Image (cartoon, rainbow, N blue to C red):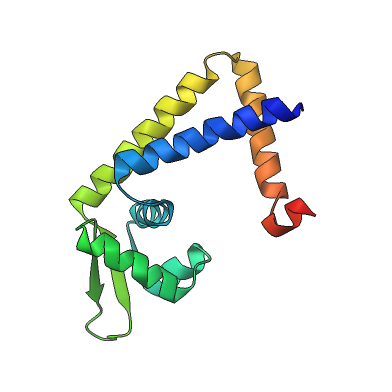
Amino acid sequence: MEQSTFHQFLSLLEFKKNHQLKSSGLNYAQLHVLEEVFELGEARTLELSRAMSMAPSTLIGILDELEKRQLITRERQHNDKRVVIVRATVEGKKKVEQHFVEDNNFLNNIMKTLSYEEQEMFFELMHKIATGAKQTEALFE
């Protein structure tokens, strides 16, 4: 792939990321955690930390901010006070749903130039690349 085409593609993805961070009012980590909570319906903090490969201390800081913005609720279990259940609020769900609408609009618009077969091939190749690039640090070696 030509270097300039590669950089144009990366710029397109960077534009998408920046647009969605601006429209949501959240940073990338906050939006990602909120999306994960939304997808799971409810989650224990420890399970969420593991699912996202995030240190519990980092996750707690993000959850504090999301709770402050009333996008999630946290509830301690009555029988075990160490267990905290996290759920998205109505406002949190709306924010994630808007994020999904934006994702779909973006994807539909960038795919307009491709035939159905090319779109299928594009997604197959993206999946292959994403699953093959498990060790992200090693990508620059």
